[in-house]
Amino acid sequence: MENSQLEAMTTPVAHEPINRTALAVEITNRLRQMILEGQLQPGEKINEKLLTRQFGVSRTPLREAMKVLAADGLLDLIPHRGAVITRQSTSEMSEVFRVLAALESLAGELAAEQASDADLRNIAALTADLRQSYQDGDRPRYFSINQAIHQAILTATGNETLIRSHESIAFRVQRARYQANLTSDRWRAAVEEHEAIAAALHARDAQRSGQLMKAHLLHKFAAINMQRQD
View 1 (cartoon, rainbow, N blue to C red):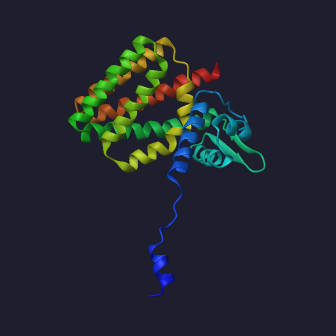
View 2 (cartoon, rainbow, N blue to C red; view 1 turned 90 degrees about the vertical axis):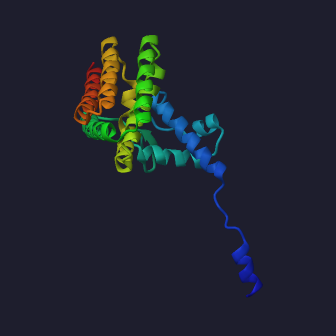
View 3 (cartoon, rainbow, N blue to C red; view 1 turned 30 degrees about the vertical axis):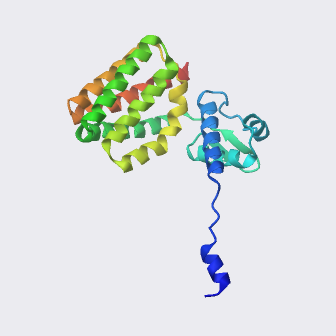
């Protein structure tokens, strides 16, 4: 065998550095949080020069992050203009929430049937933490735990197709869910709804679990819609 062929076989193949990929993920997460928290408003154009200085990075990882967030529905990539924070109409929100509610209904049914005892204990513990965050008036922690509960229920289904389908559209309403101002009555009701869901899952009542999950999401949309009309 020729030396050149041997060298070609033994020479390591160049791969993209891991740190570059990790950097793009970090920028994606930071930019997503800025959008969710309202630091970047709907209709606002992304100032790439400002953000590259703020994050201390080049435009390459920033643009990779923007592509991810555009796929999540948080940004619009407009030719010759750049990236703009999306505006969501009430009709679009209604469509997405109804589909999401249907998926979570299915998640409730499947989780009641498929969840392990350890899964159910974890959901119960998270629900207790949710109650505590409500009593403490800690809204950021409440939102974090709320997300963890929904993710735990999805994971407990063991259905990868459902999990991927849910993830593909959940980001489209995450901003509204995060920014919605909970009234004291709605906040209390949301906690009670989660406690009812946990109880139905513990009882392995698939039909009731599904119904409660769907109702919970639709109640959330009704609260958001009312706020948008104020």
